[in-house]
Image 1 (cartoon, helix red, strand yellow):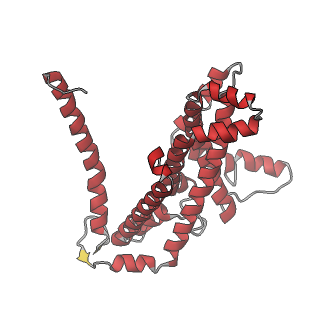
Image 2 (cartoon, one colour):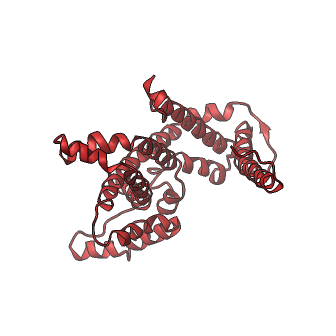
Image 3 (cartoon, one colour):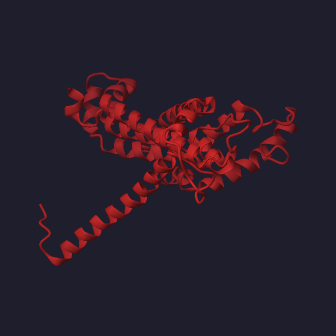
Amino acid sequence: MRDFTTPTDRLILGAFVLSILLVGALIAVPVLHAVELSFYKAESFISARQWVGLANYTRVLADPAFWHAFALGLGFALIAMGLQLLLGIGFAQLLNLPLRGRAFVRGAVVLPYLLPTVVIAVTTHWLLDGAYGLFTVWAQQLGFGRPAWYDHPVSAALLIIIASVWTWTPFVTITFLAGLQSIPASLYEAARVDGAGAWKRFWHVTLPMLKPVLLVVVLLRSIWMFNKFDIVWLLTKGGPLGATEHLPILSYRKAFNQFDVGGGAAVATLSFLVLSVMIAIYFWYFPLDEKGAEK
């Protein structure tokens, strides 16, 4: 174990500790400030504030819009995460095969993950715009009329899910691909000797070996999808008529559109608490370490 006795080692250790403290401060200060604002009534971040205690929380929890946004975000996270897992595992299995051009395909599959969200949103608008969108024009030429992609709640929600799956499946793919490459080939050979087919090898060898990766990916993708703001705001802004308004959008609208900073902070704080409870329950039932799993 390194004892950090030389000046260089101490400098490296000090820089590392300082970076951790700075990152922690950048995260903790806004979070604590949002929690503080949730106990006040304020029309903006610079206006006079009035202490109201838990009034913002009781008002938000009594609002049907909060529960609609919560259910919508939960459904959005589960559906998008599930599709990303299915496609990511499937693509990872294909990219792990000894095929020609595999290196090129592995590089190309990461491209959607590298694109900025605003580029994806603008491209989607160009394809689906109700007046001049490419898919809209094709639908009219085929005799389907002019589809209202953004005007129907179901189609608007599907657009968000499809865009999210297309953007984030590469992350899941490369994560599972790294996990697949760490599985010893001897395990598959032993399974073949025992007469296991492709499905049994996947079920009894691949999935158990990928369990740590799977647990981490499910956790991260669920959190990110539940909190996803940019793609939803850029595509639908929570519309039509609040049909795609989940908790991050609701918090933004309350704070910046309805001039209810305390209510928006309360929604954000409740969202943080919900995620914290979900994460605790998740690790309780699905511990990452083998000792916890045996208990």
